[in-house]
Length: 320
Ligand code: GDP
Ligand code: ZN
Image 1 (tube, rainbow, N blue to C red):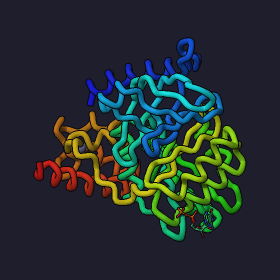
Image 2: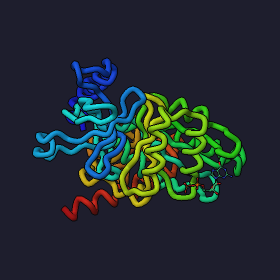
Image 3: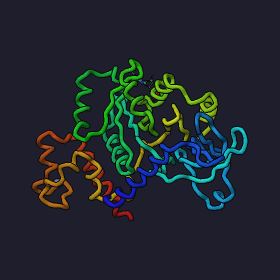
Image 4: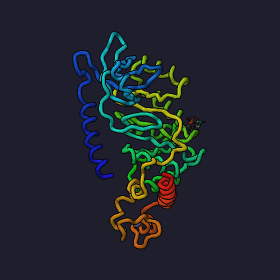
């Protein structure tokens, strides 16, 4: 992934610089973020106003694809309508859900009812890492378990360095910390049904002001009608996508078997200690990962899920 990383990082930096620049681009050109596409129009948020934008002929002809999350330059025609002139470079792009420029994947799991699905959590962290999106693991329903259970799960993920939050939409535990994590970023919320995604969205948007009544009305109206992805804008810089799916996520097709352990940070930092440079950390002798597992420095569940994903990746390689 080395080369891919460095060029993407450069792109990342330039995108960040652009986002920090002033939103007025030319005399009539503005910079905004696509909140959603709907019936041939794109809704672009800029300075707390939602503009209904069409595409210029040239963009239509070129079949340029615009995604929720895209930063665009647009011109204001009159009032709150306009036309999209150009899309700015993307930091990343997902197919399902179709969004661009994601910063974080908030992986929501319940501690109880339903019990946490550690394989799904690890699958989502692999997916996020591969797409260079920060995974944030958020355990909800903390009011239903004791402190020891929270500590058990914290210990599994501590060596990975992934941020882990413990929340309850019932007691309010951890909601403030989640706010802080979301602030200024574009996040997607993922998790099985029943873990509390809707409750969490409510807990967040009740306390946070939507940018304008206009945006909140339009978003609410759109919400029930659509297979389209919608972005909730919590303030000028904070976006969150509430999206169905992710629970039957396949590992990305282009991951090769030797990439996989690099997506487990606690493996990556220890791999140099393996006797063989090609070590898959499975049956090889003198494997630093298996040593760390035996010492309790890597969690059993993380290792088992790695092995399961390794099988999957090998199957995928065979079918291409
Ligand atoms: P979704 O399917 O992921 O959107 O989950 P919902 O938000 O609909 O929540 C599923 C169920 O879990 C509902 O009955 C909620 O009231 C309940 N729930 C959500 N958050 C919590 C929590 O923090 N603690 C407890 N005890 N129940 C919760
Ligand atoms: Zn090894």
